[in-house]
Amino acid sequence: TFVERNPKTGEDRLVASVCGTVHRVNKLITVIPFCESTYQGHVGDLVVGRITSVGTSRWTVALVPQQKDASLPLSGVHLP
Image (cartoon, rainbow, N blue to C red; front, side, top):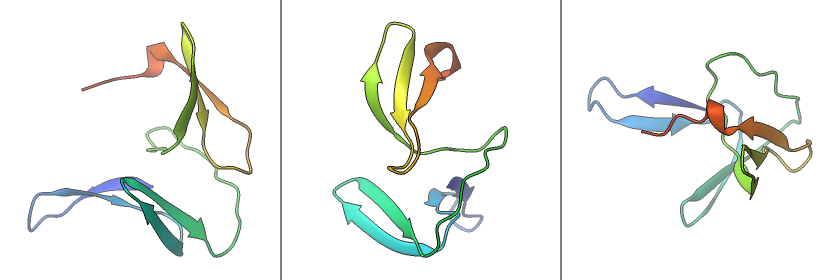
């Protein structure tokens, strides 16, 4: 998943990097892929997940139901 800027309107939009069925519940948008594959992360990737717990120095993030939760140190969080 990544953010793409539309050159005609100048607006940002969220683009899924997998082909699948889109499910929308209020503001939550998920894409169920047609074929299962393992995500190989790279520096600079935008990763969408759900915060499952908040600690004093790190958050636990559920990326997809089939994988283990990720640990996100608060030092790596950059808020606008």
